[in-house]
Image (tube, rainbow, N blue to C red):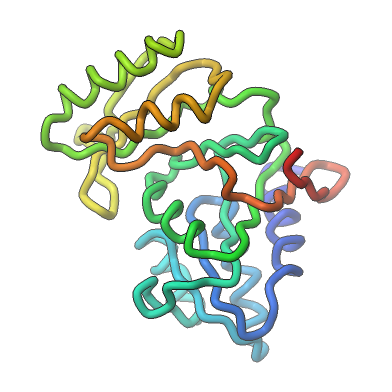
Length: 231
């Protein structure tokens, strides 16, 4: 089973949790897109959902496939969000933002009664940090913000390369007009402490640590999909 097949397995298992008439947060990324395609097949056969997309990219795919969309202002309270992750641990603490949509993803997830994470088994880790942590920052004062992030990391014994994400030869900008600072810390033994440090920096708009947000994870591997709850 290749990586895409595993993503489809996870997406199909997550779709079983979606009920007719739900107000649904719809994530961003390659695994979330497989979920969108499967959801669209059910919608074409009369299944009813109203979706709130977490990115312009997801919105375009949903509209192309005929899924009804609303803004979060129109549907400020959602039943369920289905989204992927770049990493997750046994506590269902996540690293997200590889697709550049972490701010909207976190807003939508926190507006939902439940969040289900879908991923292939390569995303499950014993300790977060192998995947660079995306930190969304304001373009204004980006150098000062970067220094503040370095100092915050140092206080926690973390070090590593911090790099502004690029799109070709240009800086990458999120849908909200922000930059992404990718922090390659290597290992993050205390995600809660890092979250608090980053949240205290004025230039940090949001970070990709999702703590106590996901209620369930569906992990797909060659043997099929399995469900994880936080420990």
